[in-house]
Length: 159
Image 1 (cartoon, one colour):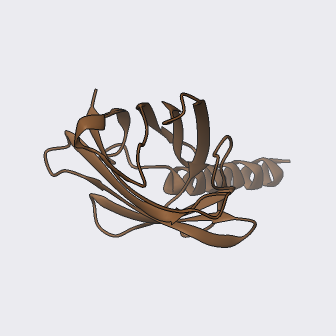
Image 2 (cartoon, rainbow, N blue to C red):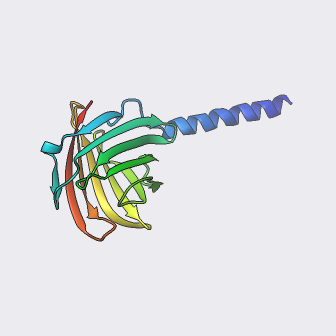
Image 3 (cartoon, one colour):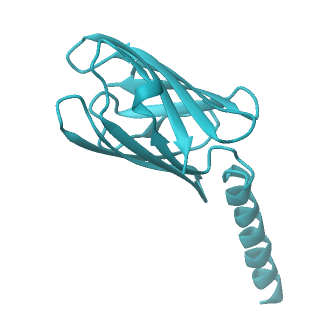
């Protein structure tokens, strides 16, 4: 009985340690709320987003993201996903252009991700937090579901 309890206890500790190892570090500079600065952002072709708010939170499985935005046509989009910096594909809910996303940390401030649709890479994004932690930029290039190429340089201010 004691041996069974010990095995269960040790197994639980190992599982907890592994889940914490995959969670976003508390000092990850992306964590927090970010508001799109439309005036500083660039969209090709334009016009682009009218507004966007992104919230990044630490989660047991990595980083949880939820964002809401209003596109050029006035349509509201709600996108959410949870990912880790391991290069694996994670599902995205609500995206008009992508089904999955993967992410790899380049350095403490920069992350590169591939955005996919039907298993094929159709977008590349590079996310960078400024060294002072106040500005987030995202360079995103790809094709939308209509097959149209786009490029956007998004600038967000920390809230």
